[in-house]
Length: 230
Image 1 (tube, rainbow, N blue to C red):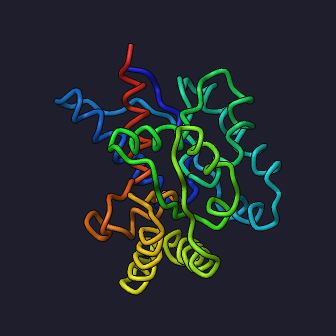
Image 2 (cartoon, one colour; image 1 turned 180 degrees about the vertical axis):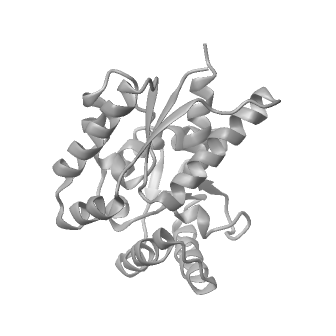
């Protein structure tokens, strides 16, 4: 079994899910007392979030790049950035190490295509919805990506940073995010990408009228697949 390297803490709420899913999936595949071989570097998200707010992406990339080098030195065979937004600096992370970076958009696009869909709505932080780093990567797999209007983008972003990253889950916010998703369905989306690793904490299976894609789970399951491959 290869060793998975996880860049976590962005936020720690979803990093818990990464750790759980990685171990559950290894146990499901191998049975018995098997669990994942992994090393984790968990950053202080406050500093990263401030760099995001200021647009200091190169600085944030340098922090994650050094963290990835630490994972490699600790014996990781691959690296996962446990956050959709921070894939904006995926190139900087990959250039810092010799081990492969498992990209969340590649894993997600493959799962969408396996489901027979090509048109998806994208929910995430404002950075993920407004910048092109994730949308372009998804489009390179043949997907058409829809994003919410400005009002919905702002509200979803607020819910992520002011509630979900702090472990706050409310029915009102579930309703607001669900409504934003359904407006994307009205534009033609056949499925909804929960492209913030905190959103699966809020949106439950069956909440939407179309399939939703939990990028946290998809990313973790891809890592396990690679860890157990020859």
